[in-house]
Image (cartoon, rainbow, N blue to C red; front, side, top):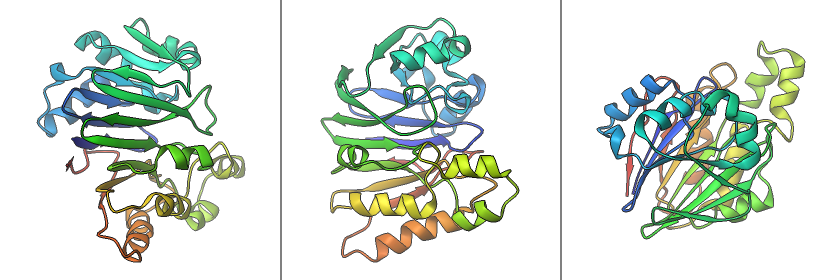
Amino acid sequence: MKLCLLASGSKGNCLFLETDSCRLLIDAGLSGREALNRLASIGVAPETLDGILITHEHTDHIRGVGTLARRLKIPVLMASRTHEAARHVIGKVDLVEFDPGTPLAFKGLGIDPFPITHDATDPVGYRIEGSEGCIGFATDLGIATRLTCEKLKNCRALVLEFNHDEEMLQNGPYPWHLKQRIRSRHGHLSNSEGAALLEELLHAGLEGVFLSHLSEVNNDPSLAMLAATSLVNGQNLCGPQLFLGNQYQASGVLDI
């Protein structure tokens, strides 16, 4: 199993996942050309991709979906209501629709899309299970609900949101209404909230954690990493590898 955050942040989000049965992207918020460049940077041939999973319809998650899906002739998997909200951006694609909360099978994987709180039409996180174990993906969270915590338990790898530092957001340049939106139940998790979620999910079999969707204005990578490492180092476990998402280049590759 391999994972890599090809891009993560407010300008574009994209995760590459490889299992023994398929290769997927989760979101494709980069341009099609840039997504192909990021795949090349980690040695992945784009024609080997089997599909694209979508979490929600915000542009930083779907910008390149239509271009990639049509060029590579691969399906796009997304919630039915999300497709209605996104169709004007992605255009005509081979579509696999689902309802959040209803698991589906795809290329040897069990994909469980669960609802999350964010200001989108029908946003989801994913628990993805295969013969090598499971990964959990949950970003763009207003809050980490009990359902989110349950769905992300006992994973080998996690992609979690560490969007902002609370003091940097409070004292930063954003207008008040945008600060309120980010801090709301439909906004984004702070570093401390991301660490609190990670604390609930730590177990001996967790091998890698990607810190994702860091704000360029309201966060500092060192603060996000400090929040995660302080937590992991305080546990009596051999901690997981930690990876920082980056807006401008692919992260390290977790190979487990």
